[in-house]
Image (cartoon, rainbow over all chains, first blue to last red; front, side, top):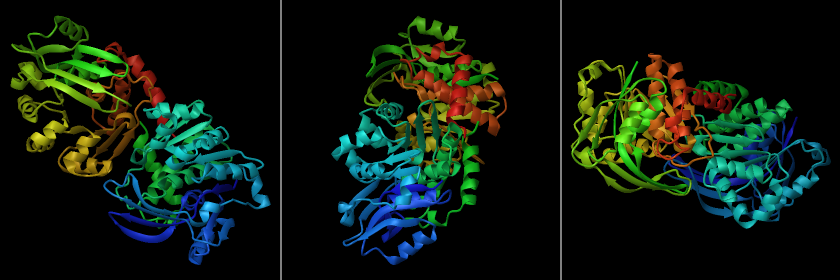
Length: 299
Length: 299
């Protein structure tokens, strides 16, 4: 089954100890699509400005991403500028220019309203809710957010949480949204607030999944070539949701395997700037690392 | 096969959000013994002062710990006073009184010199080396240390590292000893410095094991009842080394399983103050959690 992702398409400027890139293709929806496209058709819902390079459109099209709901409006494309230092575990945002994103009202094709697998990547929770209201047959809804919305639109976000199946958060977000100190209690807290399934991203420590009747933990794939972690969480979510959409059945075994596929997809993402590495990814690359990941964790 | 542990026997005063305990039984060798005793006979090498309560000796004896090399000298027993706040992930040391530990020269029985499984828990690296020189048939040597020795006896510690099979460190220690920022690179760095196997303890994120020809990762067992984490790392090491000593064969499958047993042993330790919970632990408790841990991690 195909998948629909709402999020950002951005021009990122990134500095890491390994180099500097200016105005490269980025954004939550793009990184998500890189992870999900390996398993299923991805419908992208986002907005760009008139300055958005045609080559990026061609690139996304070539990668099989469906762009009929990618709006192009007067104004500038959303831009993010960030830097990673030390162990590259957290980004320092240097500048953000919202541009056309500030007036984004997602609009989708009639045929897209029946898509069952939906991922609401990080944008304003009111925009996420508005998109959701257009969907007629949601089968699995995933939601991501960020500290900015937890702080400024807490109520909107908590309301939305009750309507989704999967909430994806990093450690800090999970703890700040619940006020809990331990990871497992933060995961429980989000579950109590309505998310049927909680996925906590722990960077180099991997992912913790907390669901109705089970817990699952998978470590990060141990790659030593960390070049640029931007988009790792979205690539993970893409691999995770993409695998579930391909299987068409959300059971415990598929959820665990989806988290493992998301993990290995993310491990490729961080090995290059932007989508450099994740764009060249094939199913066989994932399978090889999945096999190794299994041997890293089984006893 | 039996095991020999060199370390501290202490009187701990601990404050956590769940209460306060004064002068309870603690120390690296004691916590190690609580994890290892489930699998094998533990020979404890340590020192206490004349003030050390007889009831603790009786308790250790009752738990099957061999105390023939527990020296009792004039002076005070080593005391540690600490506090845990927030998510209890790191101890704030309020006070340390070395007492008899400052003049500790370990001496062991002639028959103990042939013990093959040896764990050098956290004490001065020169004391650790001195003990090692007495051992005639080492089969597997584990080593733990702490930031204090990394800072003040770096050279002694690095020299010792070349002579051990397993180096156990927490994240911060591994990174500060190697100057590396990422976990996997820190583990590699310690491996290059001579430790055949590196075990990095990551608290609520579990353990990463880096060895000659394989990597293994196991998450912490997700318990929500964290009362007092003191000794969790030593209990882990005890379960790990104890299982290997019992099996008598150090291969990849046994190492992985040993790390899993260590993990579940540590999960009991943190559910009570001091050895309150870990002292009541039986093999069956470990098996139950091991089974669950396997389902948390397999895909």
